[in-house]
Structure formats: C-alpha cells, structure tokens
Length: 172
Image 1 (cartoon, rainbow, N blue to C red):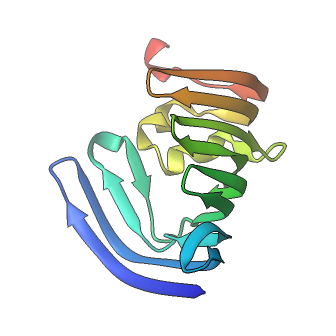
Image 2: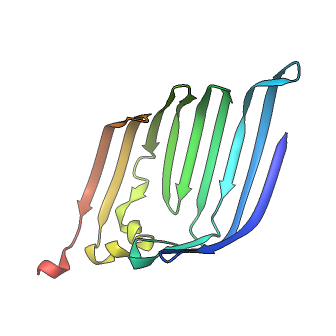
Image 3: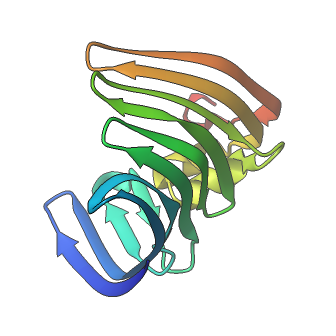
C-alpha cells in the first residue's frame, strides 16, 4: 500500500512562525493473519525542505531553501518497532540511525551517528543566528547510543571535533 500527501502548513505563536509546504509518502506492507494485521514493514519519507520556520530571538531559523528530509525504514508489530534505518538531512547536516522502540514496557534504544566530517560548525549560524558573533569553525562527528525509559535517558558514545575554533568578540 502506498500513501502520498502534500499540504501547505502555516502557523504562529508568540515565539515561532512557520509557513510552507510539507509532503510525505509511505510504502507499507502489512502481514495479515486472517483479517488481523500482525505486523507491518515499510518506509516513510518526509520532505519539509520548502517550509520556513523562525523562532524569535535568533534561536532558530530555517529558510525555504534549506533541505529538511527524513527517511525511515521500519518494521513492527503491536509491541515493538524496529527502525532498520533512519536518515535525517537538515541543510548540510546528515544523521543516520537505527534502533528499537517497545511499547510494553515503553522504551527505546537508538544508535545515531553522522557521516565523517558532515557537520561543519561554520554552517550553524545559518540556522542558529545567535551563534553568528562566535564565528564557529571546524567539523563535528558523533556516534551516540540512546537508551530511553520513562524514568531515565542514558546517552553514551563518542564525539569528535576537528579543527574547532570560536571567537569571543565581546571579550576583546
């Protein structure tokens, strides 16, 4: 079964404005036992690249030319979902993941990582205007394991910063 949708979205709060098209598609393959769905597998794609978002105070800005794509391959049943692959692209940042989400008991274990050198710190000020005065430079890579239960979140992994620098103009 395939589902495709596209819709304009627009809204605002005192802190945030957003406006633009959002599109999504899904290919889902149900596994039936008689007339009951026992499990499902498939993929989901979300494209919010042309959506503009602005959080006041310079906290966050996404223009309509910044890619924002989410792609997920999953399979699951009534008690758990296996995330076989997750690819997230925002602007030039690319993050990948996989993991397991259970409903009984509620928990999630995810492995999230970046492509080598894919997070360029100098690009951050394009979508986080507050960072512009600091002139961030360098590349950031990470490989992180998230283990979440309602009572606690445990994060472990590696973070690597190469050729990193920043400038604090107000202290000169």
